[in-house]
Length: 68
Image (cartoon, rainbow, N blue to C red; front, side):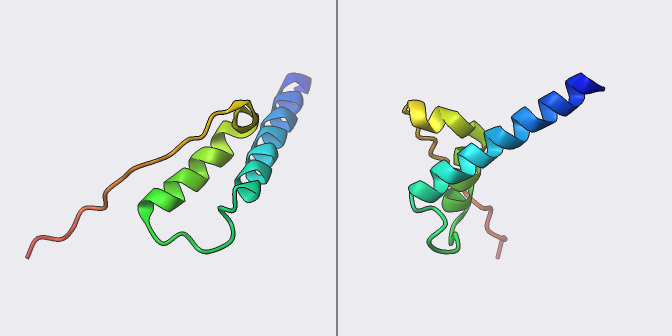
């Protein structure tokens, strides 16, 4: 039980640091307009403190278009 609570705290802190790093990069200054922007924000939050070690995740994605 104690291990779970410690792990939960570590995960929460990891994500908070990632959100701070994403904010410092200006990712929250506007609503993401593309899949690429939303993916990059999510990746920056997910990698957490690794942002400060030089990791700069960039996501490229394409949304399928409906057939005519």
